[in-house]
Length: 282
Image (cartoon, rainbow, N blue to C red; front, side, top):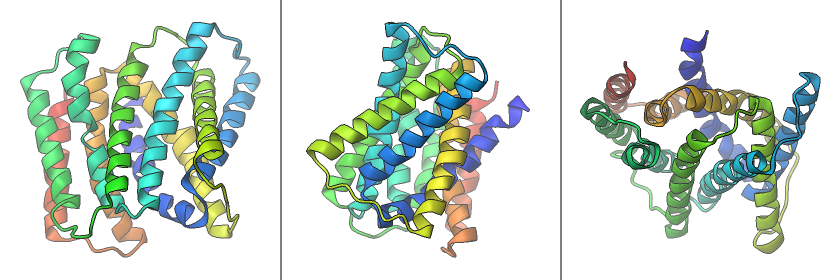
């Protein structure tokens, strides 16, 4: 069962890009994320109580999980949602975030003392090249500067969060750690709303369906799997699977949104898959 976790994660995480646009069309990005992670926090709280996990942790463990949530649920997701709300094409946003494994590989050596081999670097470069083919070469729309800046911030945040999560000294149960991480995301987005954003949510049927998907399948499902993979694998190997996400998102868009999928896209998907295999095989 554990061996299929990466594949389940890829499918669930990729599907999040499909439902982001309906959320943005019916709310401002920060209100949507604050609402989402309020429910996620409550969900993990209830599950922790039900499974008799101790939710009272040390200040050190609380800070570590809370700060990880600020990076991941706050800066990363906030940056992606905000960039798309400003007109950033979803595909280009996904492509920029796909640079994460390259940054993680570059930093995991000096920060985590992980050995990153030449084979992994070759896999990383192949993976990014394939992702670029899928999402980069056939996109000709203008990129808003503010959207580009927000996406780069998201890239830095998710890279920092991955390395930070791997360095955590706590052995908290996943449900408790995820609860405090979700709380960090809630606090971050509420602060943004208070000082910088004009909050609104249109609780339409489309919004509720998209939000339910992101809460239950992405936050409860994919994120928990990601935390498990980071905890039990090297950071550089874990994030290499992210290269499959842009191509998988493009395939989902073809299946569910009737977006075109060219032979060039298929070639990029193949190159990406080969790169991921090279970077992650033992």
